[in-house]
Structure formats: C-alpha cells, structure tokens
Image (cartoon, rainbow, N blue to C red; front, side, top):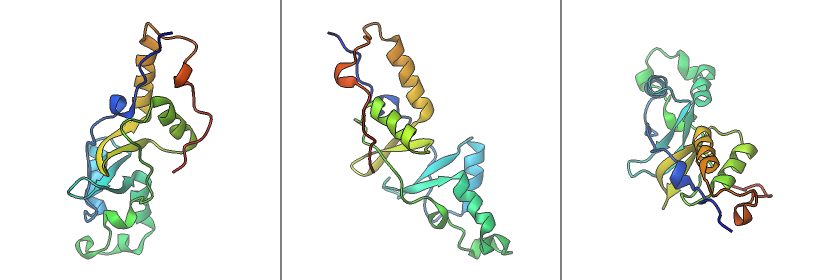
Length: 158
C-alpha cells in the first residue's frame, strides 16, 4: 500500500524571521512586531540559541509595571529578557505534521520554534500546518488508511 510522504517540521517551517536579543528594550521590540505584523518573535543569543519568545501579551505586561511611568526609558529595566516568556516549547525539525498539529490542539500557541542542536532554525505556525494539510490533500496516492501515519492518541509532553 502506498502512503503519502510524512511531512515534517522541516517541510512546513518558515525561517526564524525577526528575532530579538534579550537586552533590547521592549519599546524597541514593539515597533518590530507591529511593522512586521507579528504576534511574537523568538529571543535568541547571538549564536542563535533560543532563550524565549516575546509575545504581544508579554509587551502589554509593561503597562502594569512601574517602569512604564518613568520619564527616562533608557535607564529603565524594560528589557526583553524581563518580560519574555522563558518556558518555551520547541520541536525537532524531523517531527511529523500530525504530532505538530496535536501540540497546537493541546496548547494555546501561535508558533512553535524549531531547534536543531539547540539553535533556532525556523518556526512552525498554525498556518504552516494548514499549508501542509493542503499538500497532503493534494497527494494523489492518499489513502483512508494512514498506517504508520495515524493520528497520535497521546498528548506530547514538554
């Protein structure tokens, strides 16, 4: 029986795109998110190691901080490392699309960083998974019996 090619994160990921450094001011990161129409971006070291994600919600936390009301932002501690989400789920480039979809079902995520040897190599978004679904749907050899590609029955743990 012929099965469709199992799509992996490597097949559906996008390049890392906009990344920020942990020492960057949140007020400098916000225009990057807005200009690029992003809801968040990875925070990395200069070597590309993932440290966290800075999301729109993380940026909004600044409103609740006393530092927001300081006159001189240049001396404040409103830096990305203080507000970013540090406990970030990531995946391997060889993880299959069905497992990736299961992660999106199980967690309120918009993007999942893809790491290879601890270095950020890309991101999989929910729309990337949908594009993968389109590719699978168009596969002429697709069968109802997915065999080894069956939907996982357990949740991926972090």
